[in-house]
Image (cartoon, rainbow, N blue to C red; front, side):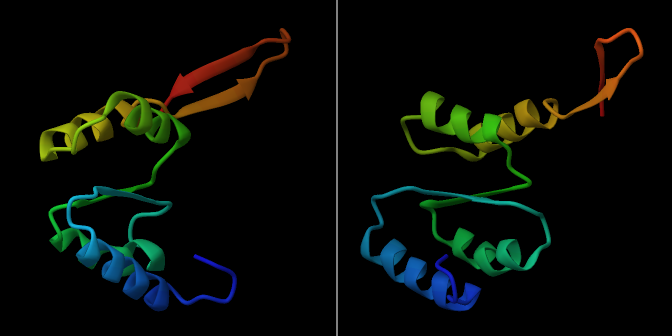
Length: 104
């Protein structure tokens, strides 16, 4: 989205492009599940060439770009989600000068 552009206007432009280019795959990554951007983009998933991920992170972005050259299947999407669910870490400083990592 551009500064000053509304989510609805953005989605309308994107939908026009999706309809115009049905052979192109659109992988959309929204920041928060249930947030306004995610909710506004969700209806675009009715198009078979649109994939939507929420709560994305950099690892997911890198994995999609580097490992998936073909269209993402629903199974691919579930695998990506499962792989990236495990990458959250809480880092805590310890008095020994090191860091302690605990999985969520």
